[in-house]
Image (cartoon, rainbow, N blue to C red; front, top):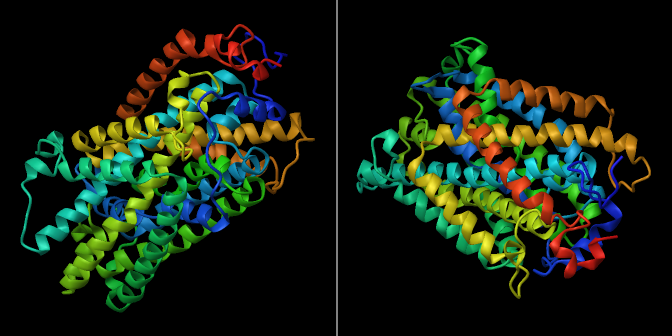
Length: 484
């Protein structure tokens, strides 16, 4: 077995020495300012958004490459939610033990070894940036719907990618930069904004459901499975994007006032609230309008437009834009904290771990924000959504495996939450995640493989040598407490 400061790629970060690494960081500490309800708001903010306002309509109606599943989009959400719940419980157990920035990266590093932690961290850097991009594309669709209703249509060249007949999606680019600016103002400001915005979002969705119920036509539910069950499984792999915001929220654990107690509660609360709203919303959407007439980019706005409520459609478009911003904020927070944590551990250059006087890692915040703006400007929504899903599902597999192994290898570790039915719940999470990964197109696998290959080269060229767990790391000259 490797020692904590060995040269093996399987060396593991000891829980009882994480505080030493944190103290030794040359970049500074993250500010602790988030309570239970702010954490829950960040989780709900990350889960609810483009799933309801864009992906539900996209999967129900279908596109050029995928058959529409119609009202069975409800089943797609339930399958994705069940798989996500198993992973959520695994995250909750780890979050109660390790309230530290990094989420799945940190959990993999602690339980499975450095090389696994590196791959998951590297994976999350791409996936979270891509999530911010896909949400920005979704918001751009609602902005287009709103401007159309106001008679001020933007040219396709400025609102779509080249693959979709345009040049660059300018609104999506500008939205990414706006969200980056908000997050750069500091965690305390971000937490307050998120709490208010999520409250507005929930009220909006409840209003949509409450009003939409009166316009449901039962005939729209027939047939319930218009394309059979196969496309529903594919749809579940796509809408999985909409049910995992809690994992990005867990990257903020180090900024929680009481992470060990509040993080498990916030993870479970956020997923329960989100799934209840998803079930109700998908029933209303497919009941109001024939699934073949749903606008894939602005489902609810088109549904209310279709029943003659154009004013309501405009209101939905306005508030959808505002509420979906919370998803972008949550995942942009996630990528910056994973990046910060990897840099602090020595796997990436310490330059990225530098924080400002407010405890905010400005450098990685703006780099990630600009990266998401580039993706949002030039790629179509489904390609980016599938790319994010394969990465997050891979992280879920790692976390579920890690929680099983860690329960048996470190039964003495203090846990404020213990997931039930060990090891069956996390084992189900592994199988469900692998099954959903299998539903994704080969192009997504290819892009993901190329990204991981780049990461492998970087790890052996830099990360393995500079890791704080390497006794020969150059960082030990300024971080002797990490040597042990």
